[in-house]
Image (tube, rainbow, N blue to C red; front, side, top):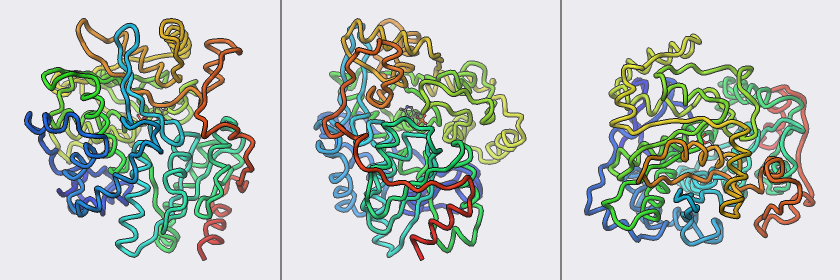
Length: 470
Ligand SMILES: *Cc1c(COP(=O)(O)O)cnc(C)c1O
């Protein structure tokens, strides 16, 4: 299986090459040259496989240059009951109104990003070792991504992680999660500034070509193909867990920001998984909802991005969206280049003419949820089902309930656990509600923390990197 760029000006690459890439050199995103097609007999065989075995069957279609025994070992080390809490890895439960919830957030950092990042950590280590190479990840986080990357890469050979976060802007829980890691290859850097300052520093480091080459700088952001691939698996697993037979159809509702999670659902559907509709749930940052309602895609600036109580969806430029638009526009790289030139100029684009296809052939619909919706949904699920859901999952449940049709089976993806967002849960339910926390995270905030604080200045960060690697 070869990989091509959505912009069409990058020579085809293998899976191992794509795994270590961020953006393609031509500015596009890498995708398989075609999606493997799963026929009914294969789907029958896959029903009943364990999560690791299902992962292997799916990933071997994409990671064709990794010897099968090695791939099996990487997967076997990743999707364990120890790391994800259950043998099912992503179990599905049903609320009293029939809506189903698939738990993707029982990994080490309690958010769905662990599902892909844990795999990526093991795959990175394997590919680097084989090539005799090393890689140094420089990233910025306002919460979930940074901790998922650190827990995936801690203690891994050949990899260092330099993760910037805005000083004092994350929750006490999120700070403790990252800063309590004492592995020698994990470097937490608190920047005196905002998240945007952290991102500017990442860009400055990336744009210093000499520095980037000398210190072998890489990233693990959501455009990484390995992450999207690993996410395809849980759509298959969720389908099998939610149905009795492969004659049934299931729709998925996905709390969305960068369009990475639901992009994997799109690919699963294109592979032949009987997915009915793909419901995009946004918060107040509703760029994607606007697209699926009107055909207009108008990314907004950081200044126009609302700070909300589902912060991991506070994104106004959906970095994986280009992968879907590539398929929607008939896989024509010239058109993608033209569309993203319009995006770069600030004009955005209008694909209203393709909306019928986006909804019909591709099954996309969308909805939006606000702070008040989130609180009301958390309250209703608590009252009706006696369970807590996190604010991002609440956005999904709100939109799923709004869009669900009679007889439609809808699986809503649970993207984080409530323990991570205790303040909003208390705002919804009052201060006395007990918010359960996995035993392994009891007392997290009391552990000794390790972090270096620097001014919002790329040179200060480069100096830290030099000191570690020289
Ligand atoms: C990252 C994240 C999302 C958004 O996922 P995308 O792949 O960026 O669309 C939603 N919920 C939570 C909790 C997240 O961490």
